[in-house]
Length: 180
Image (tube, rainbow, N blue to C red):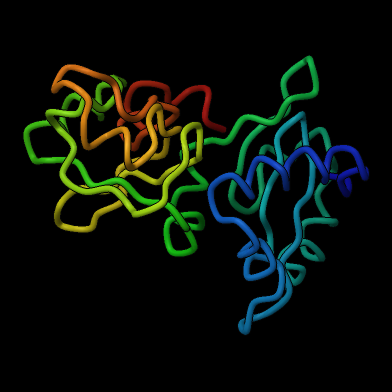
C-alpha cells in the first residue's frame, strides 16, 4: 500500500466533492483518530492510521485489502466510487433524493430513478450534481447523478429520468466478486 500521488488525490477528492462538498475534511480529521487514503492494486482504501501501522507487517503480495474500499482508478486514471463508500458518504451528503417504496426495488436492480418514483429531492440541486439516494424511511440505498435540477423535476413528465444510477446496495449481491 502506498500513499496517493498529488494527481490521484486531486482526482479522488474532486469526485468525492461532487457528493459531499467541503465535508471531505470530516473524513480525514475525525474525533476518533486520524484516517487516511491508501492505494493498493488500483483501489483506494480508507483506513485508520493505527490499523495502517499494523498492516505494514504484511507483505504487499499477500495483502488483499485493509480498511474500506472507497473506489478504484480506471486505466484512464479516472476515479470510480464503489458502493462500499456509501456508509461514509451518506452522513455528509449535501444533496439527497428520496425514492418511493415502489421505486426502491427498481433502483436496487440498477435502474435509473424516474419522476414517478421520486419522493423528495433536496432544494437547489443542480443538474449533474452527485446525490445520495435514500428510501422514504431514510435508509441510504446508493448514489447517482441528478439528471434534472430541482426546478426541472417539478415540471417534467412522470416517465422522465431524474437521477442517473451510479451504484446501489444491490451490488453487494450482483457484483460481490469485483468489490474487493
